[in-house]
Amino acid sequence: MAHQVNEVNLASQVQEEKQVMLESPVIFVHRRVAFKT
Image 1: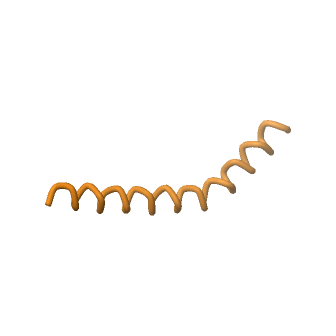
Image 2 (image 1 turned 90 degrees about the vertical axis):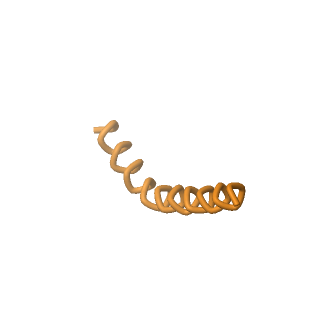
């Protein structure tokens, strides 16, 4: 049972990371523009 729970937690972490990766390009662009100016 504990192993299944670990797999579920891993899956939820991966989904959260995918959401962050979708949002982060906008943040990276803003940071690069801020650094260039």
